[in-house]
Length: 459
Figure 1 (cartoon, rainbow, N blue to C red):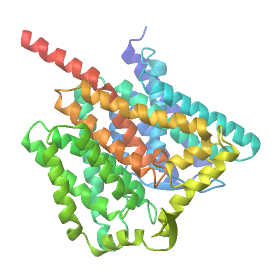
Figure 2: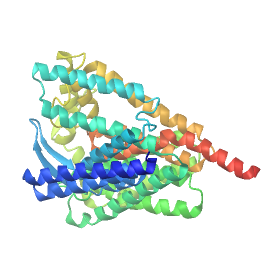
Figure 3: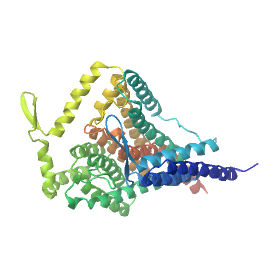
Figure 4: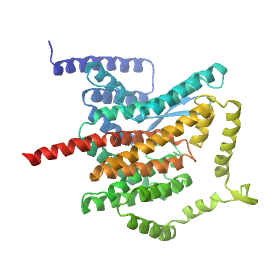
């Protein structure tokens, strides 16, 4: 009988043969070279993930914001752009599934407080989409691309959750996420002299500045939390430098939704965290006074354009003018309400419309009142879980810094979701669910670390 190592080697060889066969088929099928190269890299990452899931996840962390995007044609509602990290994630998950097939003791889904609302939301999306396809509101191709993203994010959460065994792993993942944030922030600084809105590296022409702003809000929350709970002044200074660097491209995204989401991120940090609260309030006041004077004219123009009277609304008897893009987001709320009234229970299915720059409107249209209620319950559960873990890990600086940082970043993207469908954006949701998995496992890791130190003290 072969031992576990021998079985792993044989399984890897067979897996390599299967992947090689797939690559040969792609070449014979006439797939363009750039697609074939990305698939080849994805296959290699898949094998790496099968042999060493930890290394596969580290590769995924860097690819989240440092990978290119390619066109995959289009659906009936929009062009489909697939990012390399989307493909990498799919192949890493494939490697993980193969590893679980070989090692039966590895579990698929751990029990967490998020499982029930997460599962119910997926079921409602599936039911509403099935009905939508039957009634002709959506097409299967449209549904497949969108729903695949939702499921991939949740599977990523469970994969990371199952892979973390030690506090050292968790610290390493956070370190690589911060390094990735530093790299993309520095690269994005080179875009500023062009006069264009700053976006994530390696995106197609125009990019998605609003998406990049949401990513930076999430990571700035984590960085700020780690600053407040840094274990020494050297780490605190390094993190403060990183925060300052990320703040520049964040401002230059010219994302008004991003700017608006910055305030709830900081307010959440002040409300739920007692450490350095006064200093944090003073810092916000100083930044609020001096930052506007330091910003270039195009930032001021972007703010003024928000209130350009391109479209007017009557509020409490007064006429208020706002820009056309801001008005479009407000109008979408009315559109969602009207559409929901025609199919109020489970909506029209995923995805009913192309671009809906409001996550809550999208959920209401796609899944009706039932899906909207479950989605809000899901968000509340996420918030409560993170806050509870922040309280549970009192005394551990790393755990509390990361958890309060994720809580603040989560509050930021909740507001950002008023201006974008943030919870389906891969460059926001990949790091979010990765961080969420780390935070969920932190209480267990803190107990494990305390037991380890106690044993050392006894001996």
